Length: 283
Image (cartoon, rainbow, N blue to C red; front, side, top):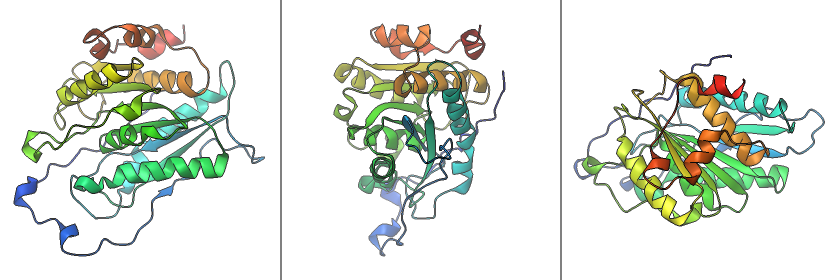
């Protein structure tokens, strides 16, 4: 099986909000626009795809109006290519287009939640370009939070949240993340148990709340892996491919995903990702 190096840029720690002077309060925001990256998997004939995946990069900061990170955007392209290739092989064969979303700003920026707004714009842009096609949002780090926030659009059918970043107690926490927008969507959280940059328990608690509103939620733990999920990269990619193609391309879910969706908390929200997961799917 081919192996890819998925790089999840580290979420940079920031000074607590109470101790910083946030630039947005002093000056007008730079005028920038979010955009979709090149369409991977687009049909040369121009035919509309069966489904679209939007990849929302990580590597952001809690507060920053700097330009988006090109490194973070490049880091998710191997996963995008894997998903497009997976859709082209197997049954049923489907056309899947993947776009990386390029944010306006690098920071989450408090209540402005710029990456979430950019994700919502991106879903609308997909509908404008391709019509009413099912959309899966795949987010990493800050992008995972943005993906969940943007899931309320009627064409979003599923969300994959990898190494999700949420502000911890040191950042003031803030209000609870909304979960009602996840009703009717398939949602998969994946988190390394040794994540040194964002507390895995924060994603567990959010998944627990989401599960109460929507039964189609599960969460996998990647034991001994960190924020970038390097150690079990092949298994994480295989899990992502199976989930995404299952939700937007009509493929069958692997048994571990079926079991995790069906299991009550905490079992279905602390499902261990087994070593060799990708190999078992190809047997």
